[in-house]
Length: 71
Image (cartoon, rainbow, N blue to C red; front, side, top):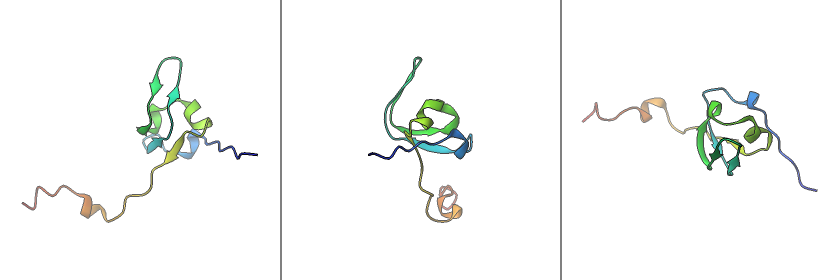
């Protein structure tokens, strides 16, 4: 018996970046796999378990800052 993994949109912040793991068909649009803002995806993508949280970014925010100032 396979385990079914259902997620809720409530598990994510509205502006959080998530990854759509599989193609998602809706009557008005086809969502290709990739990175999306939570608010841009339909509820069905979450209830079908097609959405994953992105892993945290490693390093300090200072390391990720724009490096053009140092040049």
